[in-house]
Length: 69
Image 1 (cartoon, rainbow, N blue to C red):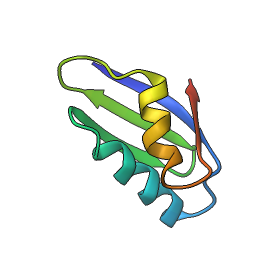
Image 2: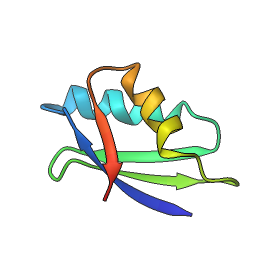
Image 3: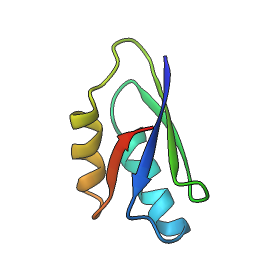
Image 4: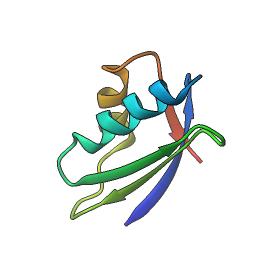
């Protein structure tokens, strides 16, 4: 299953890579993140992860916020 999320708080490619790395470190998640537009495309293997679980991982990298697209 594939989902897209809006990402707030990114201002450069370093931010983009930090969010992408945080999401890809979650087991069963493959993500790609773009800066313009600020979107995270997340593919789940097996069970879909909750927005809260994804947000927790991203918050550990910085002041980034995920929301449903």
